[in-house]
Amino acid sequence: MTSSLTSSRLAEEERDRPFSRSQDETTDTTTQTDSARTNLKNLLPHELAAWFGAHGEKPFRARQLVKWLYQKYEQDFLRMTDLSGALRERLNTLAVIPGLDLVTHQRAVAGDTEKFLFRLPDGNTLETVLMHFDDHLGPGRATLCISTQVGCAMGCVFCASGQSGVLRNLETWEIVDQVLSVQRLIASRGERIANVVYMGIGEPLANYTNTIRSVKILNHEEGLAIGMRHIAISTSGLVPAMLRLGLEKLPLRLAISLHAANNELRSALMPVNKLYPLERLIAACHTYQQQTGRRITFEYCCIRDINDSDADAHAVGRLLEGVHALLNIIPLNPVEGYNGQRPAPARVHAFQQIIESYGIKTTVRQTMGVDIAAACGQLRRNETQVIAGRTIARVGKVGLEKRS
Ligand code: SAH
Ligand code: SF4
Image (cartoon, rainbow, N blue to C red; front, top):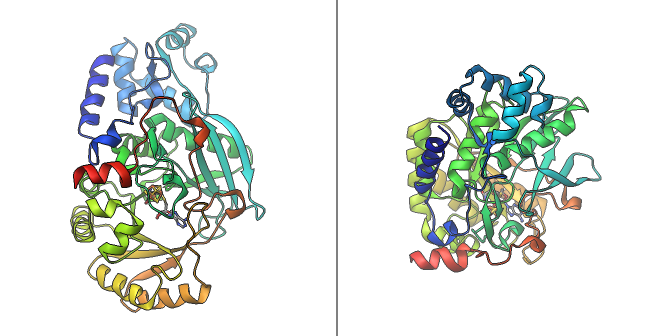
């Protein structure tokens, strides 16, 4: 059973090539903490049941394990007291349940944002941001922004996450464990993660299989039970992967980073646009909405004198006519290495008014955690963690040029 699971995972990953060969060469989604033992945190609940069955154990053991892992946050088989001593020992020999190591935990002065730096088993690090909005979620309910890759290949000029390329995809468990680790920490404060947004480091749809598997694990009702409607995935616009996502018909929230309404400007800001220009992106949005019936959120990072004019706003309004859309305006957050400026609030307001005149709902994203470099686009891969000998792909320099 273990080997058939492994080969079906590999087959899935073979299909997982929506982007560029150069990027795939940097990924290693099959890495396990201990290759001789199965990493049970990489398995979906039904796969876990099959794994127990294949080892001559009752499949309901999987449900017990899911509760231990995701509801009681247990990290040691030997402490899972409703499993027999023999089974606990057996699990210890056959399987692993690794965890992320917390390296630092910072809190913004305003207290509304916390940033966690975790170390992965291979020594790389990732960042995860917890936000306490004072609005609809209610007391003690927080939103967690998680990462999906070590770095990012997309090379958007205004984003720190893409400045050093990508090293590898995160495995399924490495995505899920950001939620699990932070949930474990805040549970003692009586708090709970109510929303998960895939808006940290990396392009979630470039790590399609692990992203979707992680969504399913987070959503599982006997585990963390995060509602699908409380999960948002943000993409820079990988069209084939968006179409694949539409076929899954998951009721999650899809967000698309737009940032410009004409190809010339969008390609200058986001190299991915050269591969999937606006016509293809908007056509994919229509298909996605036919497939899912769901509204799409568009994110628009407003940069002074670059994409914030009245004409830009009208172009966005026209582009999105006919799409069931929400436009989330994000005034640029400062990033070292990019000298764009944030527009004045009055300019952002005028921009917003024009978009609304097209009947499109808008929001302006609150800026949170700038003092701990935790705001949108400020997360970055720790460059001292580069593994010797690995290629670092940047779509702007490698992937796109290879395709064109
Ligand atoms: N890679 C995905 C998700 C992570 S980024 C994506 O690009 O969609 C989450 C959002 O923050 C994206 O819309 C991104 O474009 C935006 N962003 C990146 N850098 C930013 C910056 N410096 N200021 C404001 N928003 C930024
Ligand atoms: Fe990657 Fe998103 Fe940053 Fe672009 S904005 S570099 S896709 S993380």
